Length: 268
Image (spheres, rainbow, N blue to C red):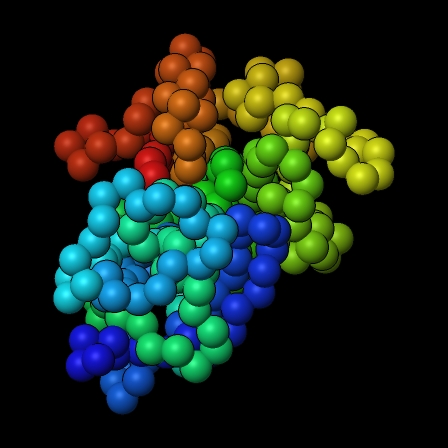
């Protein structure tokens, strides 16, 4: 138990396969981090797996610490806990164990947050489009909850894609934020509207198709170009590859340490 240096203090079930979890350090203090960064969570192989789990892809040794990196969803100004948005991988090593945790249970949490998926390199005058599938919206929540909207010279939009509306975690918070700021737009889209309990009146296309149709140009009230906009991509690799290909065709460049660009990608 010595390695389990934190504890679960909050669990909210978003859907049958998605949870929002808050983890607090146990006997140590969180270090400062930047919105958009990630940190490791872990449990021993002996930890029980949830009832929904299927056979483990590769059975973990009971005494082995299983660690995975998760983007932080909480504000960088919050020092009491870190929040995570987690999806269940039924045959996975860690998530079926995370889904079995209860409030108060011990867990491992890394003491150092890391990652370059931040707004640090974005000019203050540029608009920002944050595009995600599934739990890829987590780092954007950290950005928005920190200080992303304190810059009154830019517009920000979140484009979030999921299978169905119940998989659009944080939709209530993002909708509220949109109602409170004329510089923020929330654009959700789902792929299977026929499965909805009530009629879905929003978008039902792939994220890259929505971009091509001009939803961001309409949201911002101006053309979206590499000169005035930076794009962040997080989630499904197929979405990211498709968006990068489409954006490069419009003159955007993928950001890399030695070749700065306007496309910032974080693949799961």
